[in-house]
Length: 449
Image (cartoon, rainbow, N blue to C red; front, side, top):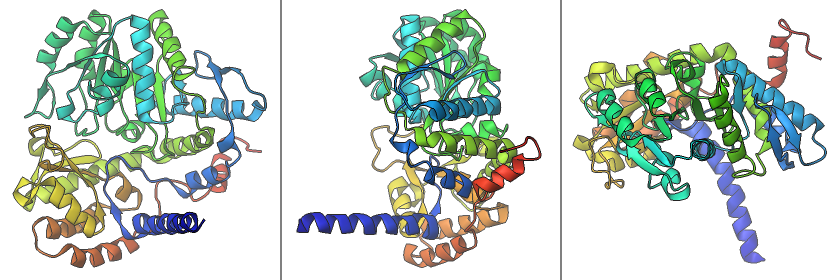
């Protein structure tokens, strides 16, 4: 019991310390982490009973509840139906599935469902070296779990994007059931329109992984994959989309072909890959969707401006930022080559000592086996933007980063300035302070009981 007590005390102390360390003392530039508003946090806190419940069953072709196999579902059904209808409204589509517990789960269900519908086990994807997510790759979920045959599209390192003409030849030759776009290192929109015709020609479905850019899509500033030709959009709800951890799938039910694929994808969600779908996050997805409906464009535009400002400033101060001839980025991310300054591992670790949190990252021209010390770092600006950083603040932050990157000051010295800077940004913008504030705001549109 003594060892149990010691471990329990350590667990509680570490949990409390983490909350203060990452939320109060650090500046977060991890591109895959979002920031929830007080209203989203509040609704998660009062869904404690919901967190313990199950709702196994089937959905209809609008993504709403069709049948459930447990009792006690009358309010759970309302919650899920409201959440899915809110998401469809936000993304202007007529089908969605919100039961996914992560973006990877969304990919799993979509890839499995489509491969069942097409009876085709080939998938053409952006190469892992170009920044694609490992769940798309033969070394990850798609290959090792689903057993799909993975064929890579051609990536143009100079353009930092998929080579359309060469990739058209790949798709025609491979004749896959799925063509997947989207990435984790995702600087510029992918060529959906340009690859849509050949995808249809070979009878494939076009899937777009929007995990990183869902909030930018909601804000209307990156690209609109469904309007550009994607059949399915998979995503996380906790990156640029500032909701709880979870996933979703979007689609447009427009013909019998899509109907058969949607049915197969829903079957791949339940019963094939999910039982408990973590219901307590669904009200929070709804609150985050409302915030994006009201404030999403402003948030997305400022996020991209901040990323581009940082790219220009770092470049002007002697650091190699990829995409210089294209404005560095059109998303929330930057890819920065720091080989001259010791490589990605050294820079990321020293910035961590200064309480600036980001990750080392392989760049497209790297040796893809050198994951321990790649050339680059990946920087994301969605968290600092939601905390209120504007262009001048971003430049100040870049100065602190440059002090560490270029060995001008020891990380421990910079850390003091980072903590002082963070004190100026202790609120969350582009959202509601409480659920009650959100309800009051909506009263002008509809009477809320």
